Length: 478
Ligand code: FAD
Ligand code: NAD
Image (tube, rainbow, N blue to C red; front, side):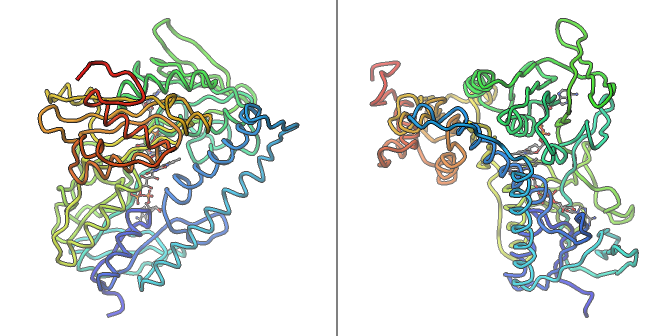
């Protein structure tokens, strides 16, 4: 029957659309439901990641990085550039063009793989029935053998700084400022705060980041976060740790923010304020009370290691379930679930998910931090190597940062790789492969790396694990 499917996916972000394509590739009759309507009234595919997340933010990071390079980074090469100007509207148009191209591409991929696309809001009912409320208000009910819930996440709001869509905005608003704000406040020195703070700082904003925690980037390895804090501060980001925002007041077209730090109450006035204090799973109106799917205490859909919910045949993936809110994590879960539905034996290695923060230089890591290993009582060896001693980094004027590798003291197995440096996002894939293949530090030591490359720092860090680095003096003699 037309309204019966073997797989119905709710939400077309990187978790949902990948699951739908994979399920269709595995021969399942698949439908995907998406509710996101653009300003032009048309449905858009690809979720947060493609529309207002990973892709547009990286487009702006690239443009702003090129502007900063042209302004301050070419001199050293003997290149004299006069009067570098930024046309913000052109930069935003380029970003929008990339988003259009990629979201249209997803629609094409879904069609090309034979996935039925349904436009509207999906709601899971009892017995794996799904209601689709179309944009005109009509409701279509479809029957699913299997349902994959992939509704994603939305930004967290905090009462002291209610969004007004113009001066106080979330990450989506921060991708759209029509001009460079003179003074930009950012609440939260997390991934979004650092990435979008960097964009506008490079374009000339005076950026103040207010972070409630005393620790900078607590999830990262301490050696890396320390290094990064120093570099970002030198670049001009004014990061205030231990600053808890308590209120805000509009002052004409500006906003006055009140915050509390160790010295007491303080205020700052900003032209724009970005609230970037985390994201929460989105389930409102998506699960009927009798559908049987349970949430955990933090509002995420409760799932097991293979993304099964409390209802047989109903799965949940991506930001709407536990684990890091990352596009590639959601996509991998989507593939795993599609395989399971097709009767294959599939599982995911949650210990080898890379994290990247696209600042300049980038921060990237996979596996355990030194602090986590200490807390777990694991005996480990550690090796680090600075980019300053890498020829290619010198040539690229990219000498900030280091690679740090952690390995098990007894088995030599690589447990973590932490990088702060140019192209860390690309280099960390070497760590992911090392973890996936259960490599030892010795495996990396015995691998031939091309010269001159930034990745030689990975090789040297692996050698340093056993005090065998060639291009630096080792801590201990062997
Ligand atoms: P989403 O991408 O949120 O997609 C969910 C989709 O479901 C949406 O399209 C929504 O409209 C739809 N939906 C919800 N409910 C319904 C319903 N009832 N019916 C129909 N449709 C529904 N991650 C990275 O890995 N790398 C990055 O560089 C990165 N950068 C980011 C930058 C920013 C500014 C932001 C905000 C996020 C970034 N992320 C990044 C995080 C990444 O975007 C998310 O982890 C990812 O999009 C989650 O994918 P998802 O498919 O679970 O959900
Ligand atoms: P985050 O969790 O990374 O950072 C939020 C920060 O805000 C934290 O440091 C937190 O201590 C701070 N905070 C919370 N409440 C505060 C308050 N009242 N006052 C001051 N500071 C406060 O969240 P985010 O940056 O909003 O990003 C959301 C999610 O999106 C993340 O989970 C991330 O995984 C994902 N994301 C990923 C990327 C990437 O992979 N490059 C980029 C952007 C976003």
